[in-house]
Image 1: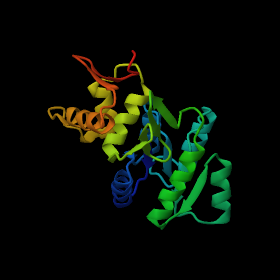
Image 2: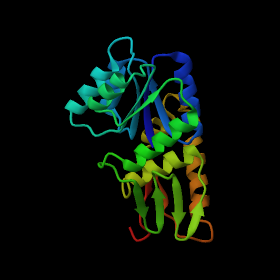
Image 3: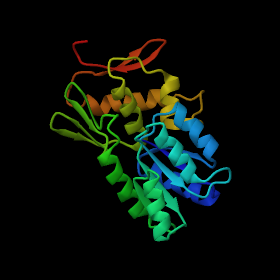
Image 4: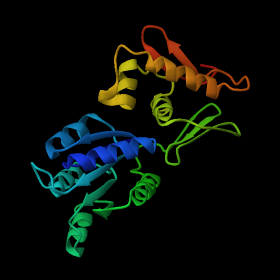
Amino acid sequence: MHLLVVEDEPTLARYLRKGLEEAAWTVDVTHTAAEAWRLLSVNAYDLMLLDLGLPDADGGALLRRLRAAESRLPVLILTARGSVEDRVRGLNEGADDYLCKPFAFDELVARIHALLRRGHHDRALTLRVADLELDVARRQLRRGARRIELTAREFGVLELLMRHSGEVVTRTMLAEHVWGDHYDSLSNLIEVFINRLRRKTEEGGAARLLHTVRGAGYAIREPSE
């Protein structure tokens, strides 16, 4: 799952990125409404955490623009504006939930989970390739009856591959989706994670689903393809 955090307070933004990544989500962080809109136009996010007090625009204006574009992206407002009137205004402008600062991180995670389970109805929350099933909302992977544990990065790699089942996913796509600006193009991290996923999904002699497409990238597909 890919989250966008729009928060202009640097310390809180770093805290949110660290905590959410440790909770196994891929996270992009921006500090302005303009940059948030640019990111929203080029990435398929699953949820946005939005501060209302941004330096270049009110977060509510960004939210109204998003809803005017008929986006159903779940939006959780994080703000110090805690009055009933502020909460009502945020919800009326199109927010799905509202959490006042300061907040407990466990409560934030619980609210994110609830919104992701509800979804925005244009991205599948259960992905299947053969007998491999990825429950995106619950972050659970099964192959047949066997439960497979994944790290946050492994989950991100596999989710992207399964969303493009039968298609070639390039190294660039994987790097941008899973590592973002933190990826070193000279490293072999992607190969390492692909090999980890193969070991986990092929345990017990199960058929190979994850393939290398030489010179192009990787693909996950049914054994018969």
